[in-house]
Amino acid sequence: MSASKRRSTVNSWILFLLVVGACLFIYYQSENVKEKKNVPLPTKLHPVVEKDKDELIKRAKARGISIVITDGFRTFDDQDKLYAKGRSEKGDIVTTVRGGESYHNYGLAIDFALRTANGDVVWDLQRDSNRNGKADWMEVVAIAKDLGFSWGGDWEFKDYTHLQKNFGLSIEDLKNGERPPEQE
Image (cartoon, rainbow, N blue to C red; front, side, top):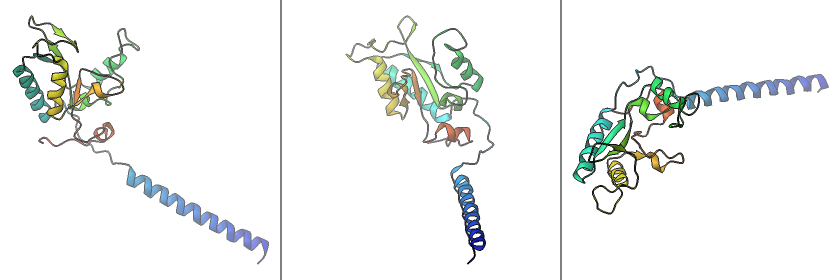
């Protein structure tokens, strides 16, 4: 076989392998990229989160703990305004995520605080207003976890006021139009 014929054969094999590789790459990418669904964004708390929020308030009250929900559903714009605090706006940093990156933006999260007997709202993790030797805050967290919420106090970036239900969906899933069922 002549040198030019060998070169031509080698070049043909290289071209063949490149085409096969490109086809496999395209196939792999299409299998691993979720198609974005065109579904409307939520405009309020998810019905299950709403129901469990009310149950949380009721169970806390039964233990002598008054809580207030300080935040629930949040628009992307509202989230961006919070994100600006401590960055481009005055104030302390209160969130690490922009609009679309928070479970609040999909109606799947709430924030809470304690309410004192005189009506003040406090974020006191040590307070024991029902005098049972346990911090009221942690009693509320335990109730919330019993209801299936996850707590921001368990995260690396501590968000002690935050409770959420993600229904097994990531933020990326939610951005791609996935939504949890309306009922559990």
